[in-house]
Length: 455
Image (cartoon, rainbow, N blue to C red; front, side, top):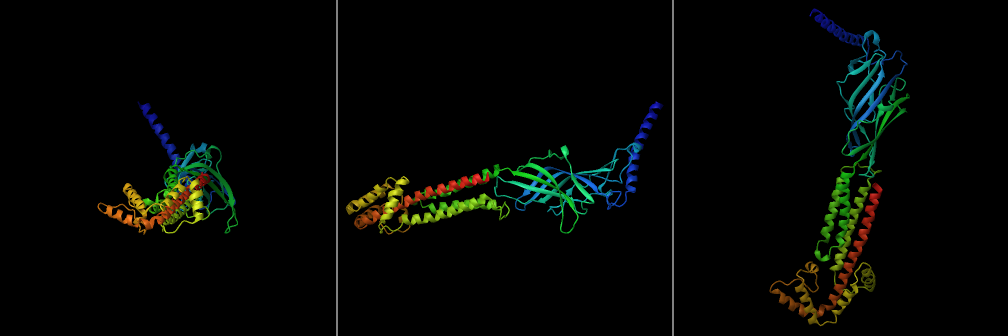
């Protein structure tokens, strides 16, 4: 029993001695360390070699409007401190840990930083020091850097952002910045982002000279290639916009009698303006890299405005005065050639039918108009907006017979005007179909061109 007690006391004494040796060694090294502002070298003209490694773990945010990249990563620096060297065999201690405030640290700074707090790093991280004086500082860090955006192919774009690390105080003769190679440089800890995919990370060492200082300054530039995930934008912005652009051209397909052509065109224009504003609020105001999809929106909105203008002219032709005869060149080109090309094969038949109204007796014309009015249970579109020709709107209740009598008495004087009216309406319908075909072709070409340009 006494022997076991002695063994336990001896074991505890050895452990206590080891801990005391580490504590005493740390106190001894730090007590004779000297000022933290002096570089840890034996001679002033010596250079401190600092090896830097930054592993990107997450893209926190890439703000297109502010053109700023915020990333999270593992920041690591390794250098040799000549004032922290001891004999490992003599002390039986391989390494110790010290606080950042106790020894000299390289003032590595992110040159293209735009964060007011500069580097956001974990404060309570200890530094590992080995017996040969090698100091290792590893800490999770968050950096926010400027990133010039190129959104010309939005939402199928890729962005190249850089992180430039270098010493702010020491030049290349005092602090030499180096990068790691091999497996330590591999970017294997990246967490997938919902918007961006990290395609590659490349690091390049370069020596830069500034106007203020003739000394060289080594800089490590980390280049991050980020590719946008386009699925969300394709389903919620691009495809609806393309479908809406085709829908806006269908204003030429609506019959003039519907009375909704202008309102339909204005509604589609407002929808396109909404999509344009959604994209404009997201992307940066760049003059040299304007997004192609923004130009496409502007073009489609212009097409929509032009379609409303053309529709107004067509409605004026459709509901215009029927007292003027159709010019021969319009009859030949529009009623004849264009009517046959766009599929209005019955244009000539309608024209002849309109002319046959002249050969009918006034009683027959009035009877036809009345019977046609009874058969079509809708009011005449052009009559509702104040036409002075024969009103063939629907008679109501007992007023039907009175309308019949009025039409019967005035049919003889309006039979020729009615023929002109039919011809002008046929011209308006043919022009409607012509501009429908032309606009759909233009919008299709524009949509295909945009998709081929940005994909």
